Picture 1 (cartoon, rainbow, N blue to C red):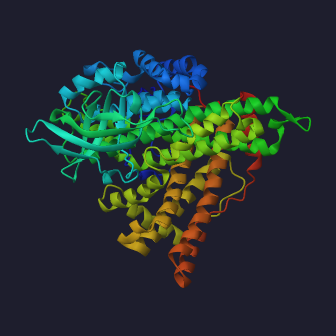
Picture 2 (picture 1 turned 180 degrees about the vertical axis):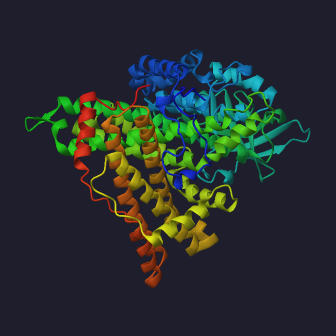
Picture 3 (picture 1 turned 90 degrees about the vertical axis):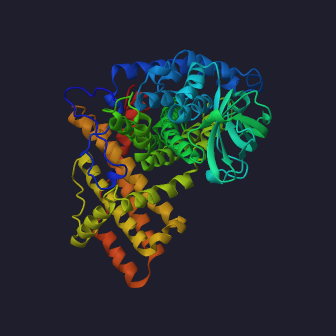
Length: 604
């Protein structure tokens, strides 16, 4: 964990999900303002690499000629030679042994290019992490340095033609041969990034029909081949093929983790992947906003710069707000994981188990980051394309590629629908396990609603307004969690429409909480930038409006008659109305972005 300086208290690591009932500012969160010199240097190195080696060649990399020449593999290997893939690798295996924040920084900078980002992530992230965390010492010695150093290209093969979101429903099979020396794999893996280029792959199959297990496979194994390249909407510079196994013998020494425990490998890897996907969103959003503003400054209609129209500036403000929130919540998660590991001996026998526990602790937050980040990016890119008008629809400008490339982010690493279902389900599960004080918080909120909340004042400072609105957002989320669980009990798992609405309430709570907590810390540190407070105020008030509407709809979904009236009264008692004019703050946010030429609310 980085040194946050003598004037700042250490980053804390509360229980996952505790943000729902902990006032913003109670716990110190990590933000990019806390980056130390080494982390900033690593981010700068990664950023320079992308600017020099990737962006000037983006169109060539996605061309048929570029794919045929495997130009992306050459770029990937250059990045590895620079040491970027060695960040999370322990020193014992030739790496830097750096923390999750540093690893997230690399994913963030790589995200400026969609093609490179997914190629990089499949290789150095989900294609390496399972071996790092679940491999034996001998397995790590065999494969880690080769992957991190770039001499071998890795991939991660979980999805199948008949099982995408239902990962455990895999049909790829493995049976032990009579000699007991090899597992014989049969089946097909679908949508595998880096498949055509892979030398090593983490692959999942069911042993004896029911024991979900992870294996490491290698190019050249008999019966292993890849399919033809998929013709994709976006990410055309990356490789996406099937991996096909026909009686492929895989040595028993290539089992990763334990037979029948592949779900641990898969789900922990997905949690990491979700956080890094959100990290990759940040730089692409910043790049798109910058390019969009520059175009809108130069382009005139009705003798007026496009950027000077209020309708466009409103969209600029929304894009800046969403980027600040994604940046805040994503680095917060990585910092919390690092804080949990700060005092753990890296050489301890249980260090990997402690790492997995720390990552799993923030599974809810990881799902939130993936959903909020990918959907915010989609909205930002759609606006940026709109600013370009018809020119945004042609290949002369980068924004059409951004839109194509980013569409799959809502599908990768578990669809957004699946991640939404996981959020309330995990919260309730932890409450039942007494890992999270959710039930106590719900009880306190219901008591507060009975007493009634005070009206939200219209004449307070923007950051104070944001804090008050955030309190009401959390109250509505807790009330609706109570209402839904009381109405359906254990059957709530089958009420997906309700679970999705509950997830939306929780997502808004965490996104706003992260921005407010970060801004409070910046303010306390002497950064009185009024734009930050304006961002928080607009984000919080709009999230409160969404939450109030969602709560009322949920009441009518769950109840009727007197019961519905009683719950509507509880919602009304939260006083979720903020009688404020957001337009001046929106205009100030947009003006700052136009003056800056893009998103400049952080620098790293």
